[in-house]
Length: 427
Image (cartoon, rainbow, N blue to C red):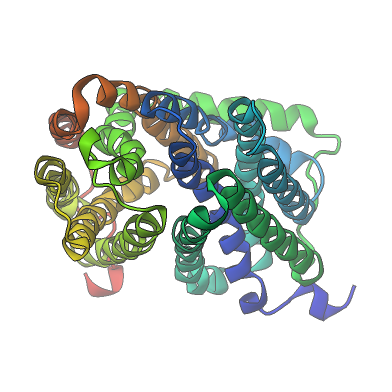
C-alpha cells in the first residue's frame, strides 16, 4: 500500500462521499413523494407509506456497532453505494408495472436500509480518513455537498422528470429519471472504489473481544436512558419538529394538486425549482446563519428566537392555501421564507443533540439522538396525509400552526448551559 493510497487529498473524496450520502436520502424521503403524487397515489397513502421509510434511519443505532465489528468502513461505503445504484435501477424498471406501488416501496425500503448503513460507514470513514484539523476544516464542505445533493435530487432530477412528462408520459418520464440517477450513482461508486484512501486504522474491531463489544453496546444505551432529565430530552427530540414533520410531507402534494382541489397547480418542473432548488438554498442559508449566530452568543441565548423563527413562517402556507396566488415569484418567496426559518430553527435542535451527547459515549449517544429524531418525523408524518384529506389544505395548514405549540412547550422545559455553543476564542 503506497502512502498516496493511504492519504489521499480530502478534496478528492470528501465532497463526492457526502454528495453520495445525500442523494438516496432525498430520493427516498422527498422525490418519492413527488413521483407517487404524479402517479396518482392519494395523499393519505403517500404520507403513510413514505413516512414508514424513515424507519431504517430511526433504528440505525441498533446495527451501527455491527458496521464497526465486520469488514472495513471502506468496504461498507462501496458495497452500499453499489446496492443503492442497483435499487435505483430497480425502481426505474418497476414504475410502469401494474403493481408498481408495492414493488417500488419495497425497493425504497431496501434503499433506505442501505442508505442508513452508508451514513454510519461514511461518517466513521470521515473520522478515520482525516486527522482532527482536517475534520474541522472539512465539516462545512461535507454539509455543503450534502445540500448540493438535495438540490440535485429534489431540484434538477425533478425538473428533468417534469420536462419529460408531457413528451413521453408520466411513468416513462420517471423511469428515465431513475435510470439517470442509477447511472450517476454507479459512476460515484466506481469513482470511490479507486479514489477512497485506505486508512491504517480502518479495520473491523471484532476479534476475541466480541463479548466486550456487546456489553459496551448495551451499556451505552443504559447510560443514555438513565439520565435524570431523560423525559425532557425525549419530549424535546420528539416534539420540537412536530409541526414540520407534518408540513414537510404535504408541501409537494399541495404545490402539485390542482386549484380546484385546494392546491397551487404547479407543474413537476416548477416544483423542482420552487421547493427543490430555491427552497433548499434558503434552507441551507438558514442553517449557516443559525450556526454562526449560536457561535456568537450560544445555544441558550438563541433557543427561543430560533423556536419563533422556525415556526412563524409556517403561516406562509396558511396564506398560500387560502389565497392560491398564481405569481410564481411570490410562491418562491413564500416557500423560501418558510424553508429559511426551518433551517435557522433546526440549528437549535442539532446543537441540542450535540449538547446532550457530550461525554464518554458521544458518538453512540448522538446516533441514538438521530434515531429518536427520525421517529419524531416518522410518526406525525404517517397521519398527516389522512388529516389533510379529511379537512382540506386550508384547515390542514391551520392545524400545522396549532401543532407548533408543542415545540414552544418543550423549548421551555429544557435546561442548557449558557456558555454552550459559544466560540471560546470570542468569549
